[in-house]
Image (cartoon, rainbow, N blue to C red; front, side):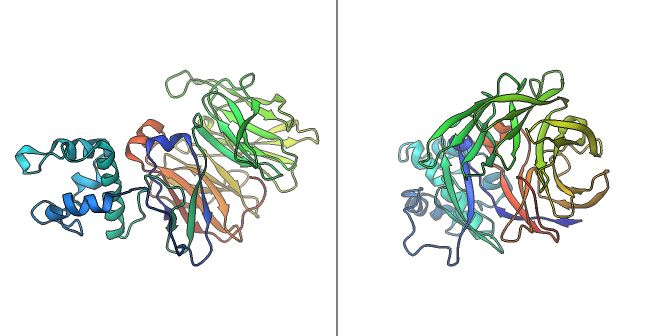
Amino acid sequence: MRKMSIVVAVFLAAALGTSIVTAQQAPTPAVPAQPAPSPMGNAPELFSSTCAPCHGTDLSGGRGPSLFAERLLSETTDAALLHTIREGIADGGMPAFKGQLSDADIGRLIAYLRIRGGQLKGQVSFLPDPNGQIIKSEKQTFKIEVVAANLDTPWGEVFLPDGRMLVVSMEDRRLLRMEPDGSVVLHADLGAVATGHCNDMVVDKLGRAYVGNFGFPYPDGEQKPARLARADPDGTVVEAADDLMFPNGAVITPDGKTLVVGETFANRMTAFDIAPDGGLSNRRLWASLASNEYPDGCCLDAEGAIWVASPFTNEVIRVREGGEVAERIAATQGVFACMLGGADRRTLYALTASSADPNARFEDRTGRIEAVEVEVPGVGLP
């Protein structure tokens, strides 16, 4: 089985859990002649005066242990590190720095340690503040931009035909729209149709958005079918389809006539015909997946196959209509969304994390963008 490589490891601070972060492919040369000031402020100086004397300038150890030890930087949360630096380790010879450093200073120091450690180990860096950062992978270079902040749990994002971005606001069941001036406005209220938190969506060439939702209080509630919502360009919301088990990622074929949506908790992909007025009909099974394969985000290729994100098997699965699995590509952790992109749409990108629990992700910050080159390019929407 082929494996994906890590393109960007964006380990965001908890505050950025309410933000939309984009990774735009940057031109070469990628690094500007005069980079913006570091968001870590005086962290390098703090490192030189507080850490380097004991742990070494390369973090490999000296009077103190190597910070590459698994129990230190690799497997310790920011909160635990802050407590250790602030209070010290009395029986380990580490002094307390609470009289010298504020919690903000310690936070910047931790961010610097993670970035410096990643650089020294040849890994992609942690990004406590990703805005404006340049990230290089083996084959590509990206510039990170925060395009919206202080949102209420943003989820799926898709562009309208005129280039404006739609954003699913998961918990309050709304669809938001980003205007050219950067403002965020209400596009549609999905509450009359959605019976659970809203998740992924696809937008057709006329700007009609088909939006899925959980259908029940996940993860502890009794599983119940959900209704797929359709939000028209004027903000009108109607039921597009019902009796779907956790409708999630969806695609629309290039001719605009077929919508395929993943039913996560039914382990299947379901297809509909799209009428000229946006109505859905002729519901049919497109493909069944294995019992441990729960389809999440997905994308369509030029041969009509669908790449499906499989969070619990840590892979992306290329599935043909009828259920034949054409290929599997392993990721480093659970895959929650995927997209064919790049100049020729032959780069398969995957959004990965160590679990589906967003609260845990704020703590361990394992979110990544991984990528692999594939033979068949992407087509259709999104």
